[in-house]
Length: 196
Image (cartoon, rainbow, N blue to C red; front, side):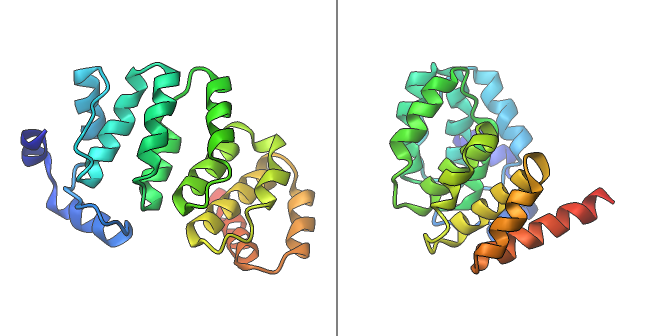
């Protein structure tokens, strides 16, 4: 993998990611389509050294070549390493579970975590798979004091507003007075602007 990193690193992309991704892991600077192409060429799970930011992207994406039960076991271990929003959001977007019962059991297992990025992963999956049925669950995460959890709750509310029930979100926003209210309103307004 060292050779792959050496020949595919993009220093401008590295600088860009270093600006927007706060992480303790060194960023090599490999663009995501190149990482995905690399994993697809190998067609199996790749256990990395978990030293570089890109190590996690490769390992997560390669988990798609494992059975769902094994996937959940390894993911539970990997989530303990997560220290930034980008790893969480990449995982939500790119790791596929064929059996949603296995995913649901996994989410039930991690839902009481006190770790910021595990909570963000949990809420992100509720938004992706259970948007219309998880509103009351997500409300319970409004007071974690974690910035990246607050942002994910706001993102969930924005999606709920447009895809499920605007009135419910409007009513709820009147009832709360927190950063989440401010973030949600901003996300909704941004989405309306983008649609114009």
